[in-house]
Structures are given as C-alpha cells and as structure tokens.
Length: 462
Ligand code: SAM
Image (cartoon, rainbow, N blue to C red; front, side, top):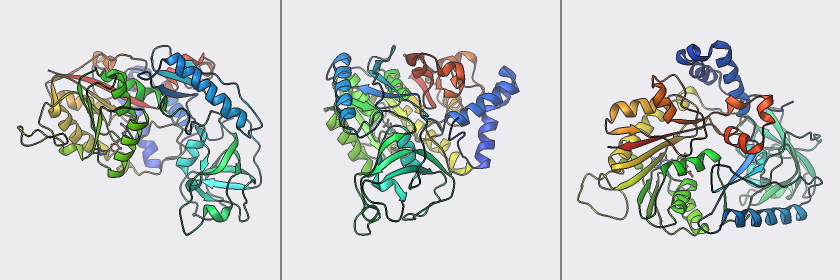
C-alpha cells in the first residue's frame, strides 16, 4: 500500500491536467476509460521516486567499467561505515542503450514503523529523502521540543508548506518518509544567530532505500535523471563545435555536452539567475571541464543587434552556434517524487510565452544547418507538443529530426501534430508503464520507462 497515493494539486490544476490528458484527440484514439486510467496513474506515479537512481559517468575521464567498479567500492565502504541496521544488496548496472549511464535500483516502499518523536521537513527536502538523501538541517521546519543529537525520530514531509518554522509539532497534511537519527540538538537547528549547516537527521530507515550520493566520486559520477542524459545525446555535440546552452544552471546538461565533445570546442552556458552561475562553474571544475564558459544573462536578449560585434560573452551575433540546447524553464510537473504542488493555474500556465521568447532567440542564434534541441521536465501540451506546432508554424526554416537514442514514448496527441511528427518527438511518460506487471519487469527495461516526465524535440535549421 502506497503511503502517498496521489500528488496534491490545486483543484483547478487537477481539472486543467485532466483536460490535457483527456483531450479530444486522445479520447478518439484510446477511449475515455483508458485515458482516465492513464491520468490517474500519472497523478499516482508522480508521488513515487523512479525505481532506480541514474548516474551519468564521466566517460571522458575513465571507462564505464572502471567507474562502475570504483563506485561499487565506494558505496560498499559507505555502507560498512553506516549506522543503518539494514544493509541492502548493492547492484550497479550499465544502461543497455546509453553508454555513459549507470543504474542503481531503489528499494521501496518498505515497511517502516513510525515513532513517537516527529521531525517535519519541507516538501523539497522530503522529496530528496525519498531519493536517498539525508535530511539537511535547513530543510527542518519542526522538531520535538527537547530533541537532542542521537534521538531517533520519524521524518514527515509537509505537503502544503503550512508548518511554521520552529514548531514543536504539526498536524497538517504530511507524509511519512522514514526514520533517522538526529545529528543536532533542536537549539542548533533553530539557532537565531546563524543558519544551520550540515546533516540534521541521518536517515537509517528510509521509506525508499537508495545510496546517498553526497560527495561520492564527485569527478566521476553525476546524479542526473535519465531523460536529461538522453537530451544531451540527442543534441549530438561533436568535438570542436560551438554550443549554446541557453538555460543552463546548475549545469548538468552543460557538463554532459562538454564531456561528449571530449572537452574540445566551446560550450557557452547562460542563466538568468546570477548565483546559479557559480554552480555551473563549480560543476565544470569538479568534472574537470575547461571548454565551458558560463555567463549571467537573460537569454531572451542574447541576440546582438550589432551583427559585427565579436565578444566572448553575450549578446551574440545571429548564427553564432552549431547547436543550441533550450532546456526551458517550465512548470516542472514531470518531476518525481513530488507529493504536492501548491501553484495556481495561472502560475502553471505562465511559462508558454517565456519559452516562445527564448525559442525566437534560439533560432536566430543557430547557424544554418545547425541543430536545436528543446526540452522540458513537464507534462502539459502547452509547453511541449503545442510549442512544437507553434515553432514549425512560426519558423519555416525548422524541420523536426529523428532522435538518437529514442527510448521514451512518442509525442502526445492533442496539439494537431501529424502521426509522423509525433513519432519524431520523445515524451517520457511514466504513467504508461505504471501497473503491476510492469513493476516486475527487469530493471534495465523499467529504467527507460519509469522516469520523470520529460519532453524532447530536435530541429534542424535549413
Ligand atoms: N539545463 C539545466 C540542467 O540540466 O542542469 C536545468 C535548467 S532549468 C530547467 C531552467 C533554468 O532556466 C533555470 O536555472 C532558470 O534560472 C533559467 N532561466 C529562466 N529564465 C531564463 C532566461 N530568460 N534566460 C536564461 N535563463 C533562464
């Protein structure tokens, strides 16, 4: 029995999503019952973590086998030092189709007994715990009044963000994510003088068991969702090219692109949030990638009005790049696990215009014959297939291209795209395999289906 059955959304957002997943084209193709069942499965699978952890291996620095071996050793050492009563078997599998991916199964939901002492954490922290993390002190919102380091506590995730910071108990909507041992006293967690740092609760009996990756082989493995790794391969960067990553922070895809190019060429990474640029640079440094140049910039303004201008940073003259990745800011409704989203419908629908502005800049900055990849981690039509239909209409120079690898489903019906066009799109749809028989499929097969919700379109500019 699942402890977090369906994602909690505002009723207006649930209705909107239902109208997307039960749109006329879908109903005509699969019927009402199947469309409704897929929608309900989507709402359920969003609250559960994918059944494996995906790590991208730095195959520009070592072979996949070497990295797999080192990772196994490191995680076994970690397990031996851990205070967890229960040790789970450690399996690391290469992905059958993606040469730089290693998969580690996630075990859960396990049967864990809830305790009397309760710590409440924010929803984001709760989701991280479900993916194998410990509880970091800034994520703690409430704890027992006399909690001391060493106390054993149950950890709950506050679904609606209604728990008051510093509370001693909370009776609102919450979900149990496992048991752990406090590493700090309550007084240090809610200390007024300085914000707390480090692990607040070390998880010993998590609801979902997977290795915590904190500081594990930082230059050789990078935690990344499988569809994000696929997006890097679909872009297909080659050594010596000049690539633009328009919305780059924290730089997961930027670093992958540079690694795929053997660090030969130039990867320009832009992001609108200044302090996120440090994260891109840190990640590039840890992974030993020198071809990345990160700039704080609003990418909607990244096209220079002076075509003769030649500077290292933005804005850039039109047709400056061989390939452009537009991993767009989006409503993020494909993220898993996600137990609650408190956004209004207005907020959910606010991304389409921004994505179009970014798209305009992307097309102008791309050379003729260049490749543009558009991706999102959301499930709406408005931010995915409708954007593709709009782009094909608005930019006659763009043609949809086949994707390699193509391990997700095709595009979803509902935006008026032809069957051929839909086949060229890649939509990761965990709801399509969310049933009992699929849950017992061998891991590498499940790994390609039981992912976050994600969308990829690849265009060529003629
Ligand atoms: N590609 C990233 C990765 O793989 O690590 C994730 C990117 S995230 C989906 C979207 C990013 O777009 C956010 O970091 C956000 O700050 C940035 N962003 C939003 N609007 C932007 C704009 N107008 N120009 C540049 N970056 C923007």
